[in-house]
Structure formats: C-alpha cells, structure tokens
Amino acid sequence: MNETAIPIAFNPADYFTYVLHQEIRNAGMPGGYGGFALELGGEPDLERIQQRLDLLVEQFPRASARLEQRGKRFAWMPTGRRIPLERHHCPHGEGAGAGLRIAVEIFNQPVPSPDSLPLRLHWIAAGGGGLLLLNWMHPLLDARGAKILLDFLCSGQPGKFKESPPLIGEKLAQWSWWKKIGLFLKARRHNHAAISLDSCLPTAMEEGPQCLRLRVRRYSKEESRRIASLAQQYTGLAGKTLYTLGCLMRAMELEGPPVAKAGYCIPYAFNLRRQNAPTPVFGNHVSCLFARATREQARQRKGLFAHLLAQYRQTVQEELDIAYLPLMWLGQWLSPARYAKRLRQQRSGGELSSVWFSDIGELRFGQEGFLGVQVSGMFHLCWMTLPPGLALLAGQLDGQTTLSYSYLHPAVDEAWLDRLMAGMDAELLETEA
Amino acid sequence: MKEQLKQFIFSELVYHEAPESFGEEGDLLEAGLDSMGIMRLIMFAEKEFGVTLPDTEIEPDNVRSLNALEKWIRQAPRA
Image (cartoon, rainbow over all chains, first blue to last red):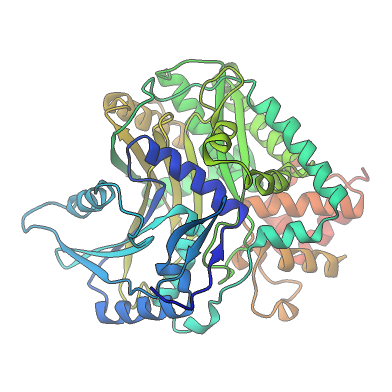
C-alpha cells in the first residue's frame, strides 16, 4: 500500500455506476465490469505494452487503486500496484471463436475480492494474432475512457493524456443554484413520465447467479454502408444511434418480448467528453438519456423513427440531457440500495430498462493499427442487472458495424435471442426476416 | 456567427489541438462531430440565432463546415 496516497473521490456518475455494480454483485455475479476487445492480425510488442501499463499507473494512480468506503462516500485509494499484462493461449486446433470463448471465461471468473485490480489487460494469443482485452470495473471509467486508454497504450505521445477534473463537476460549477434547482425539477418530472410506461423485458427471471454469454454480429462493409444510409434516411444525420435503438425495439416487438408490457424504455449514456479528446481518461463522464416508445409505436417502422427523433430533439431542446446531472449529484447521498430502487424501479414495481444499450461510436485505427499491428475487428461485453439480463453494445471500426449482445444464461432464452438477432438484421438492413 | 459556432463546437463537442487554426471550410464531420453532437449544435443555433432548422434538412452538406452551417442558418426561417 502506498502510504502517502491521496484518495480520489467518486464523482456523481462514478457513484451511479457503482450502485449498478452493487446490484449485479448482490445477485451473485461479479459486478459491473465492462470489456473492450481488439482483434489483432499479429502479435504486438507485448513488452512495450507492459511498459505502457507501468507508465499508466505512474501517470494515473487510479488505474490500480482499490475501492474504499469513507463514511457514506466512496473513493479510489491508489496502491501503486503494477498491472501485469495477463497472457493466455488458445489451444491449437480451436477455431476462430476460441479467443472470444476465453474472453467470456475471463468475465465469468468468480466474484473478485475487494483487493482485485479494477483494471486488467489480457493478451489472448490465437494462431498468428489474437485478442487484446481490456476488462475494467465500471466505476473506474466509462467505455469512452476505455477507448482513450487503448489510445494511450499505443500512442507515440503518452504525455498528452492527463488526469483532469470530472466534467460533471465542471458543468455543475458553471450553473447557479437556481439553474440547478430548475434542472432538478425538470429531471424529476421527466423521470415520473419515464416510470409510468411499464417496460417489456427479455426475461421473466429476476434472480441470479447467472453466467455471462456473448454473441457478436459483424456486418460487412457493404452492409454497414447500407445501415448508415438507412439511418440517414429514417433518423437523419443527428440520429444514427436512434436508428439502432429503434431497430432493437422493433426486433423485440416483432419477435414478441418474453415479458410483454406497455412499451420499451432503453436508457443510454450521453458522454460529456468532447469527441477525440485525450482527456479525461478515468472517471465516468456521462449523463443518462432514455429512448421510449409504446408497443403500438414500435410496430410502425417509419413512425417509430420519427417519434424517437422528435423525442431526442425535445430532450436536447429542454436540456433534459443535462438535467440528470443535479439529480445524479443528489443521488450521491443515497445508500446504494435506495438509489438503485430509484434508478431501476417503475411506478408499478417492474424493471425500468427493457435492455441495456450503449453506442461506443466510431473507432479508427487506420494503417498504423495498434502498435503497428492491423486491427481486424472488435467487440464489447458487459455484465448487467437481472432483469433485463441483456445488453447491446454497438460500435464501428473503420466504418464497419459490430453489435455485441451480452446476456445472462439461463435467464435469456438463447433460441429467442437467435430470432431477435435475425430480426435485428432484417430491421437494420430493411430486409425480410 | 461563424465565430460563435466555432467557439461552441470546439468548447463543447469536438476536441481539436489548435481550434484557432481550424478553417471555415474544414470538415467538421472528419474532425469528430457525431450524431449526438449535431443535435446539440442545431439546438444551440436555433436558440442563439432565433431560427428553425428542420429535421429534414439535417444533411452532411449543411453541417460539414462552418461556411455550410452559416449558409444553412442564414437561409432558415425565423422561429
């Protein structure tokens, strides 16, 4: 333990993700861990990666900190521990899916102790190449931060990545008390509306423990171009994420949700970082948005996209995207259990989220690749609460779309998921299922 | 107008190492302006310049550069 270490307090969004991490742990699963995997065409310089990991701990002591409760609040206590690059080998003769299988096994390891590193990096060698898997505890950083961290590991200028204060704190400091109160009331009204539409769910099961499984759907360049063109046609340039969300609602609706209620509510993160910014790396810098539609709206393709776009426009116009920040700030003083109830529970007592969703956005490694090695693919994975037991993480690598479906087994019926994924293909590409 | 747009884009939406050197014809989409950022930019422009920018006109050609944005906003109906 580093005796002179200074604790790094949670920001409001770190606590928000910690509460969900606890909910997952309380159900007997490892917790709110996220995974970001790059598929590499060759073996990168592993010694160089280890040197970068050492530099990471030096520049960002939080990277290997331990989580500590200090009174009612939580903080990261730097330990100075080294993060070793963990090496794995796929057995000879196993197919292309072996790396993915090992990645999922890593995620299914028993519940880590409080002393476990909050961030781990794995190299899974398979054939001539392999998978570089970043596995992290969500209160430490968000998915955009994970992408920046990967940039740090392969950047020629690691010095440009710096610790910086939480963006939520910066935003809140800019506003007067009246503005904060106004936004708080607005967010509460919005929340009341959100919890009144009972959400359809992918599973009726409510108890763990469960194991995590993953299905990855990669679209070809041509398919990806078609998806982008249809997204532009239906939701415009400002609504690419909404197109994926709308297709998911429709795929669920057309397949028939295992728990059929009034409609769909899909929360998703709004990242406060500027695009391409090398900082902040650590911490969560997100607010929360909701895509909602009734089952009837979900049945009408064109009408659904128009509805989601209008809903999003109204959200930004009325500042509902940032209205959650004062709410999250106040949430810090609630116990994890009380906060979780407010985050997850409908007025009727059901689960708010029909599915967990995140659009990681566009990644470009280009000719340089990752430390000179070609990046041929990527996928993401994450644990989630039960219900909903299903998370869809979307992303694009050099223009090519990948959808990663993480789900809990046996809670989610795999035959239903197969049909949902086929329906998703049909919706995204506007073809017959 | 272009200065206000530039200030908003580079302080809120997109990181650029030297925003002052970003030209009026510079490609904002290549610079990192994404779909969520575009909606925030549109809401900023509507509020700041008192115009209505219809969803049907949110096209790459209208948001690709500061010059294109200015032209689009100047032609838009008053709110």
